[in-house]
Every structure is written in C-alpha cells, then in structure tokens.
Amino acid sequence: MNSLAAVLASLLLAMLLAIPSSLFAQAEIRLEAVPSVVHPGDAFTIEVHVDLLGAQTIGGGEIGIEFDTQTFTLTGLETPLDLAGPVIPDLFVWNGPPPVGAGGITGCNLWWDGLGSDAIATTFAFTSGTTESSFLLFRFELTAATAASIGTHSLFEPAVDLTCLWSGSMLVQPSGALIPTIQSAGEIAISNVLEPTGIVCNALAPNVELAWSNAGQYESIELFRDGILLATLGGSETEYLDTTTVLGETYEYQWVAIFSGVESPPVSCTVTVDNSVPVPSGLACTDVGGAVDLTWQNPGTLYDDIEILRDGVQIALAGGASISFTDSNPPTGIPTTYAVLGIIGGVSSMPSSSCTLTVAEPPPGDTFKRGAINAGPLIDLSDAITLLDSLFGGGEPIACPDAGDTNDDGFLNIADGVYLLTYLFAQGPQPPEPFDTPGVDPTPDALGCGTA
Image 1 (cartoon, rainbow, N blue to C red):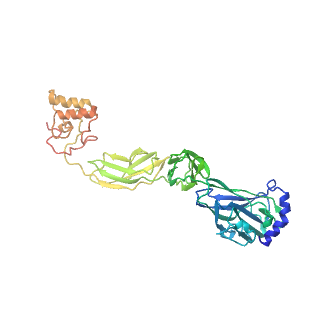
Image 2: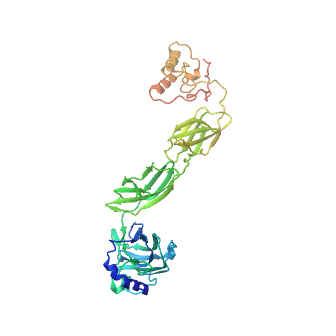
Image 3: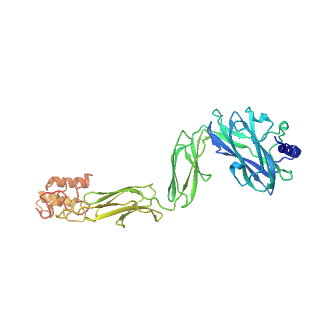
C-alpha cells in the first residue's frame, strides 16, 4: 500500500486491536448489493456507503472488501469522481485484481492474483475533513461465475495481515484519532429461479392492474409495493388488482418468485395512478333496421357505470362492465352522434371517440307492433288466443292483420299462432320487427292494419 496507508495502519494498529470497534461503533461501512439476487453469469454492483452514527468529522480511512474468485470476478469500479456525489475525497487510491487492475495502491500482490480470495483495497483522505452523516463513497461491479453455486454468498472485510500492512477497515479523524468503525458483510444470493416476465402495470383509476407471465414453476410469488410486502400469491397467479392506491400517487411494484426456498432476482415496474378516469375506446355505431347498436371496448371491468350520450345528452346509464347498447328509438332522417364515457366513484372519464350516422326514415305505412293482436299492453297468451279464435273459432277479425303475421311470411294462418306460442312458452325465436317498439312492416305484403 502507499505511504499514507502505511502510516495510518502503523499508528492505529495498537488502538484498533485494543478496542472492539463493534462495541463502541461510531461509524459503519455499509455494503449494499444492487440487485441482491442474480443468476449465474449476471453482473451486479456493490455500493460502499459510509454512515456516521454520531457527530464525527472524518479525515480519511481505509476500506478492504474480500471476495471468492471462484464465485465472483471484479469487472468494474467507479470512484467518487465517477459518482459525483456529495462527498469527493482529496485522495482516493485503490487496487483490485484484473481486469480492473491498479488505481494507485501497490504492494501485497497476493490480494490481487486471482487465486482463492481477492480483495479491493482503498485509501482515501479529506484535507479539511467531512461531517457528512451518510454518503456513497465508491461502487464496484462483480460478475457471478457461470458455475457459481446456488445460495447466499458474502463479501467480507479482509483479516488483519501485517505482511501487507493491513490492520483492517477503519475511519479516522483529521487528527489521526481512530473512529470506532464496523464494516457490514455484503450478501448476494445466486439463484436458478427465473424471474417473472412480461410485466404490465396499468393504472385504472383509482386502482392499479398488474399482470405478468411466469417463466418457470413457482411455489409462491411475493409482490412488494415501495419495498413493503403487499401480497403473497400462489405460484401460478399471473394478475393482481391493487385497490388500495391513491389517485395521483406513484408506486413501484416488485415481484420475487420462490421455488424450493430459493428466490428469483426481483423484477419491477413503476406506475402513477392518474387523476383521470380511463376512456372507453373503439366505439362503433350500426343501423339495425331503425335501431342503433353501439359497441365499444373498456380498458378494464372497473367502471361503476357507463353513460351513453346521444348528441351530447345522456340517454342511458349502463352497467360498468357493459360493452354494447341498443338505442331502439333513435331520431330518423338526421345525423346523430353517439359517445360513451366511464364513471368511477362519481368521476367521469372524457367521452370516447364518437360515431355519427343517419337512421333512414321509416317507409310510409301502418304503424303496429308485431304480436300485439288484442291491443293489450303486453304480448302474451291472450294475443295467441285472439288470433286462433279469429282464424278457427268464429271470432271477430283482428283489427291489424300485420300484427297477427307473427312470422312475417305475408300470410295470416295457424303458423302464426304456433310461432307466437313457441316464442312465449318454448324459447322460440322472437317475432321479426317491428316487435320491441311500434313501427311499419319492413316486408312488403298484402296485409296491413285494417285489411282483413
């Protein structure tokens, strides 16, 4: 190591050995793996943070981090200058094994020979000291070996090695006095469980709809929101509806799949729950013989209601899952514009894209309702009896033969009575229009209303 490191180590070795720093720690060197779970062959970073546990001024220090070369290879390092963080030492020198290589420290090459355990060694100093309570000092990249064993692996502080002038990781005050320091072990899990794929985060105000595909066999899936466990799901689940979100808030979701006690690497997405209600799409209008069929798509089945607009005025309020509606009494002979909008919690979406059509005016002729033979308010058994009595029982001729032509074949006979009874009691087909509402006969024939 260089002269500064040697002086620091020599002066402070006795104090370091005499005082168990873990008992009186006033600072911590914290290692954080990002991500903390990887597959064999994957790269990850170790962030090296310095946290002061009390009012201290740091003048400098040394940090060493040891790793198994059979499991990891050092593939990158970012200095404080690379990070451009809040604290940049006046001196920062380091060394590590190839391919990263030396950064200023020399000596003790056994630490950097690629055999057994290797280490990253750093020495840093602040001319005027720093009182920053917590900061990221440097970051390095390790790559897991393709043959790395599945399980949790640790990165340690190298043991004291006086032949290398190494007395342990430490922080010192500008005066050279030791700051009792602990260095946490960095842990990284190597997993053979594939993470879920095809992540979808869809904000459907006021909820968030989550969907994914499972890349393998799982026993369970842990779903986190902003780092807190939201739900533990079955291993075959592929969707989840978060109904506890707040409009306008942004959330990060993270999935961890588990099989045989081994966790997959995490996979995540971020979504903002927009204040607006999503809009129905794909509205289409079709003229169906004097009525208008509307169809559309919903972004989810989460609406409370769907409002139907005709020329900007509400004509109906449909269920929240509806994707169709029939306007059975539209204006005729003039352009008419339709739109739909979704409603959630009393808040309406913007109207969907509109559609416009002109329903043809009905041809001239008698207006009637097919099957309404006795002019009662309902079409029921009494209409069939009136028709059959007129045809075969000597009853009076019906007032509107077109209404009695229930199968619309242009003839008034027993087939019409059978057709109506089958519809009423045997789930037969509905009589042709005009049936739901009064209208004219769309099929030319000799019958009419008032023609016997």
